[in-house]
Length: 402
Ligand SMILES: *Cc1c(COP(=O)(O)O)cnc(C)c1O
Image 1 (cartoon, rainbow, N blue to C red):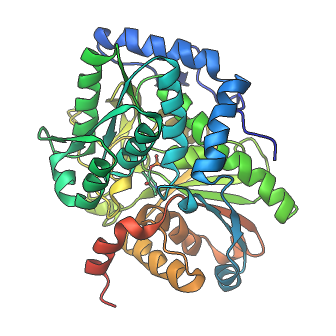
Image 2 (image 1 turned 45 degrees about the vertical axis):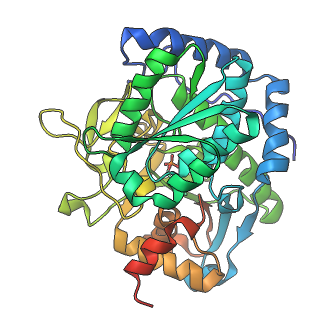
């Protein structure tokens, strides 16, 4: 496989960072110099072979890429389709997030920054950032809602072990959106020596584009792998959606293929009608959060509503702006599965294939069972297995009476 370098797609944002009307850079004036510095730097390196050679070397020898494309024979037999899993769960640190933190870390070094900061919800992005900070000799501070600090003790300890400082954010709902607010606030006053590593394809331009490029290696590999292993392009590509980075990584090289339909799966929580869910595309409205215009869960007055999902990685009240655009253009289809359906799939994949998925990834697996049998008969399906379930064991133990 030739080393990965991003591709410019016709669904790239325009010069001002807009995907159609979505995206952009709705930030305080004081943040603009930092964003412009980042944009200029990324423009310089986006297609630079040396920059990518440095990323690819770490992706190969540190992360363990390419991740396997594994044909799940047992669930394939059961549902009558050819199901392949893109094994991002096998990456170092256990999920797709490290693909992005490595690349942003290298960018930070090239910009001469000595510190990195990150926001985190469940702690997965915090751990992936603390990991590369340790590797690259960068100081690391992670912003995390106080409620999440309490809920995710293991990841908090892991970050500290890796040498990061963790700030418990006490404002608002004390969760991810508040952590991101504080990270942005910190960055405004410390941008001179500090790089802000955002964990998903959201935030002000150029983050959504940058993170999508960095995760694009997932579909770049998967496309070559499926052609080699199966001889055809897939009919369907599935991925779960929090902010949308593993999905954009999994979709980008397939979106323009006529044969392939990409489907993004949002968190249906306790059911869309219950009001407790993370389905910003299904039930949100366009609005501005964290510097971007995109779909948001909000009240009629424009106050952000709390998202809910059994999986901490999916309960973000917004969504990366590229997904809002792809939905409006009809290029990608979006749907949701509930907590209960995801938990069934969590057990199903564990028992059928001996693979314990992250709760987030279990949402994409669960969707297999929601697709009409006649539609998927003998079809080829790739699913992004975005992460492994080790981080969810304690919660699973409390939920499942085995
Ligand atoms: C963080 C996370 C997600 C959700 O984030 P996206 O940016 O939507 O990909 C999904 N799966 C796992 C395993 C995660 O850690």
